[in-house]
Image 1 (cartoon, rainbow, N blue to C red):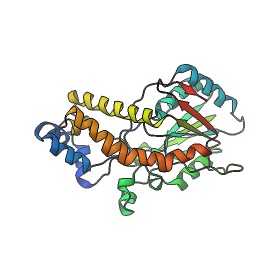
Image 2 (image 1 turned 180 degrees about the vertical axis):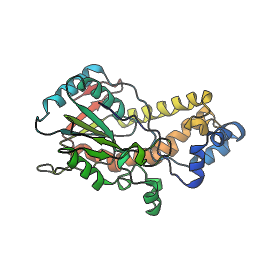
Image 3 (image 1 turned 90 degrees about the vertical axis):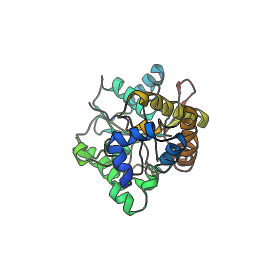
Image 4 (image 1 turned 120 degrees about the horizontal axis):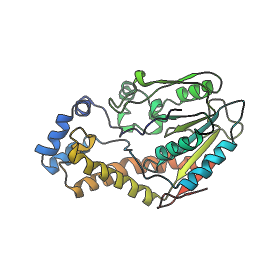
Length: 291
């Protein structure tokens, strides 16, 4: 059993930004030798499409109930393909890891991040979509459908997105044999067919829901947690924000990332999938799951 780890933030990879990502010295210079207003301007010029990271664990009882329900859906003759989606910062990766921990005691479980089905940066640049990374048009849905259909009967190759290069890395691709359960976690899913599902579609679409104000609070809490931790980690991606005051960093996260990017993506593209979901999980402010 293997499962993917939550990726870091997606950022538009123009050449100057690639240099920043690949060399921590420049990022550190922003924090140590640049005034806060200058750092804010430079950060805004490198707006992220998505910021993700560790989240608070959901309640164990709720996860156990969900795991039992998934186990009950297993078909002995074919893998159960599950899609788990929801807003950035709602805890999809954490929930997936918790499910795998429970289910792997009983069945063969694999999990894949849909980040691997993002188009390579070269394709996004050619199509003028680098600033839309993480939005629906940045995903290769045909490749996702092909991999899903194949893994039902044969080993299938699943591409992977590198946290180091912020691009698809062929060296990280995984070949997965048909498991009992495959959980695809992330964004980029299309509404499923109204009738019988096609082979390239998930058998179950699960939407992890929460009040928008809670998601925003979790996002800001996480962002600031990384910001504080970067003070003692010169290699941290968040070193670039250390030139800002705590207030400026929080304001940047709220106004430039949440309000301009993550919230519109949620409202316009992610939230509509809730009406097409087979199961909707509601996560409250204390991370308890309700079905």
